[in-house]
Image 1: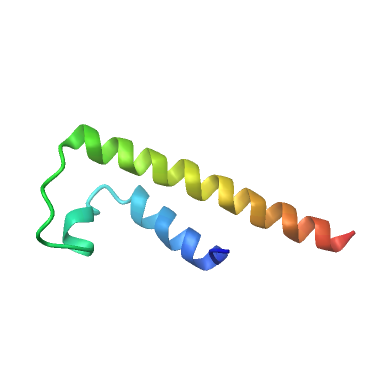
Image 2 (image 1 turned 30 degrees about the vertical axis):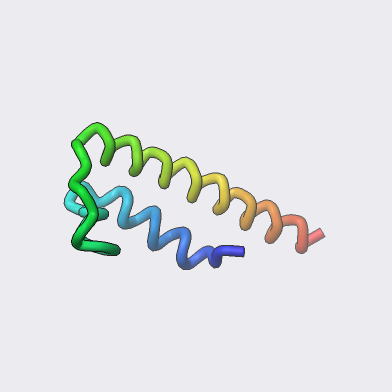
Amino acid sequence: MISEKTLRRWRKASLDPLYNVNSVENPTTTSLSISHFQELHERILRMTQELLDQHLIRKVGNLW
């Protein structure tokens, strides 16, 4: 399972308008258009939100 800290870091990076995916992992990748970046960031936000929700449900479930 991905840690909550990692999910929050990914989410924060995705919300940053200056975040450039190509410069982070592999400088030889092809450049992406603005619409591709927007779609990628929206997917990251949806995915991280879903996983953070699962973390929260797990925490609440452990309280009972």
